[in-house]
Length: 271
Length: 335
Image 1 (cartoon, chains in turn green, blue):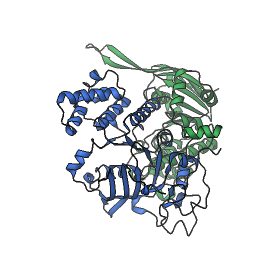
Image 2 (cartoon, chains in turn purple, yellow):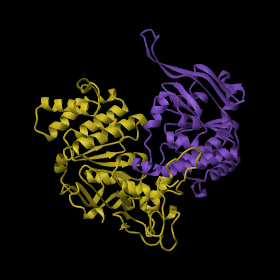
Image 3 (tube, helix red, strand yellow):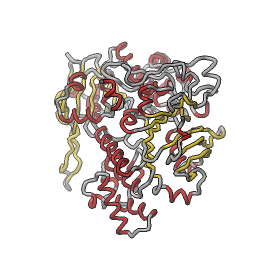
Image 4 (spheres, one colour):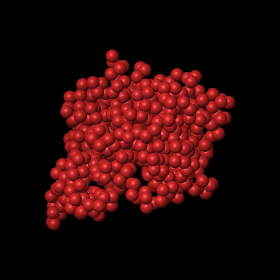
C-alpha cells in the first residue's frame, strides 16, 4: 500500500457569475489528477506556471478543499473526514513553501516558531517545545547563536532550513514542498537540497516536490508527474521521463532547459 | 593580455565602486569593478545575490545616485564618461545609446498607458519625429520582437499581456531607438522555461541583426552557456574572474567559479556539490580573500590575511586568487 494515493483529484473555480449568481465561467485548475507516493520516496510534480502543480499540493493537504476525487493517506480517505477528524492525519503531512520568510511569524524567534506546532496540536509545555525545537534546528544545521533571532535577521537559506525544521516538528511521514529552493542562490540551493536528502534518509520521509526546474528534479526525484493545464500529461520514473519522454509537452519542456554545458564543449566531449 | 589593453570597447568599466550610506557609515557594495563589452558582444555578469552585479549595472546607467548611492571610478560608453554625467545628459543617453530590461517587465511598464503609447513616447523623446511616425515605429518594434498582430496589440494595456509577452514589450521599448548597448538584468528569471527559451532566442537574433551589445546579468549558468561570448564572475562586491565563456566553463581559474559550476545539477540521483557557508555581508568583509571562509583550497596564513588582487593568470584571463597557479580546477566536462 502506498503512503499517499490521489485519485481523480479535481478543483474548479467559478470565475464569473451571472446576475442571479449562477456560474457562467469556470476555470478548471486541477483536472482528474491521479498518482501515488510511496513512503520514503521523492515524487516530483513539474510544469509551467498555471499548470496546477501548486494547487495540487495544496489540495493534498486540504489547504484548499478539492471538489472531486479521493486522497488516501495511510489507507484512509482523508478527504471524506471532517476537519476535526482530519487533524491527526494533517500532522503527518506537512508543507514547505518557496517563501520561507512569509511562512514564519516575523515577531517570534525562530526557536519558538519551530516549537509552535506542538502547542497548536498538543498544548505541549514551553520547555518541552524549546527542547524539541533545539534538536530540530541542530538537525537542519542552524548554529545555536541564531536560535533567538527573528526571521527578518536571517538569510533565505537559513530561513528555508528553519521552515523545514518547523515542518518536522510533528514527525511527519510526508512533506509537500512547493518550489522550496526556487528563491535561493545556486550555492545555497545545493545546501538545502542535500539537507532534504539527508533528512529523507534519516527519517524515511516522503516528499511531494513541486518544481518548475527540470534539471533539479532530474537530480533530486525518484518519480515525476508532468502537469499541463491542470492535467497530468505523463508520469514515470526519472529515467523514463528524461531518456524516453512520450508526451509532446514533456519533450518540449525538456528541450527548453538551457544546458549548463556550452554547445562547443558538448561536441568536443563527444568527439 | 587583459581586456584593458583592448581598444575600441563599446563599454569600458574601470575601478567602479558603489557605496550606500548606512547607520555605520558608507557601506561599499561593489568595489573596483573592471570589465569591458565590445560592440556586438554578449558579456555575462554572473553572481549570487549580494555579489554587486545589479548595482554595478545600475551605476553604469546612472541609476544609483537617485537612491543616495555614491559611485566612484569610470564607465565609458563609446568614449563618453557616464559616471558623474549630469542627469539631463543621462536622459539623452538612456534609451538612445544604452537601454535596460529588468526581471519584472510588467512593473517597468506604465499600467495606465497602452504599450504602443509607451514605446512611441520613448521614440519621440529621443527623435524628432511625428506622432504618427513614432506610432508606426512602435508597431514595427512589436512586430520585430514577435508579438502577433502588433497593430492591434499596440492599443492594449500591459495587464493584457502575459509575462513573456510583457518582456517582449520591454525589449521592443528598449530597442526602439537603436541603442548600442542593452543591459539585461535577469530578463528571463521569472519566466517559464519554454518562454525563456523564446526570449533568449529573440535577444540573440536581435543582436545578430542589429549588432547590439548585451550585458547579460544573471545567476543562471545555463543561460550564460547558451548566450555569452565572455563572462565576468562577481562575488561579494568584486570581480573574481574574467574570461571567455568557453575557457571559463572548460577550466575555471577561481574556486568560486568552480563552485558555481559544481552546484549545477548534473544527472540522476547525483548529489549536488554545495558551497558551504554564506556570502559575507558588505559591512563585515574579511581582511583576506572574501571567499576564503567557504573555499576548500584556502590556506591559513595566506588566503585569510591579504586581500588578493585581480591578476592575469595566462591566456588573457584574470582571477582574484593567490593560489590560481597552484590549484587545478575542474570545469563542466570532466566527468
